[in-house]
Image 1 (cartoon, rainbow, N blue to C red):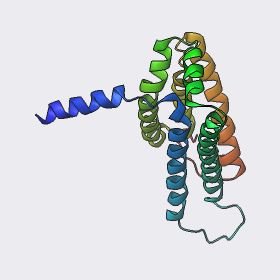
Image 2 (image 1 turned 180 degrees about the vertical axis):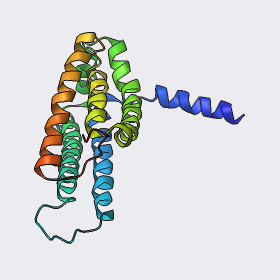
Image 3 (image 1 turned 30 degrees about the vertical axis):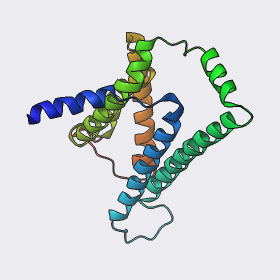
Length: 195
């Protein structure tokens, strides 16, 4: 009985789809929630004895503030589009323009994958990334994460896409490591080789 309920819930979650006109609102709210949680997590770190302008919590707070701002932009954009779409149209004109505009040119399978499967895979990848970061270090875990995340978001699973993502992952991970670990002296999770 309990297993059947779990299976039904999993099927509903897989088939759950956010309507295209509400995607900015959902993304914005989710982004703001994640940014607030990340910002609040920075208060759990004890302040260092050195009272400097840039400390170990400065960059995470700055990044979470920027992410919060971007989420707010998405929410504002959603309401601005709704208001713009509602001004100057009658109900009849709205339905005529809605039926006259064809569905997007992308194949339905790619859109279904992007809307339904991609968010769940992204959450799974983030969980694996956090786990791997503790085991193999920041740099290697980031290369692994970006190599899988970039093709997933672009819904392009060709060898060329994975190769490009692998190269981007190496370059981005090394640059971030050099800037934050070597430049700012922040301690990132490392492996036995020191990166």
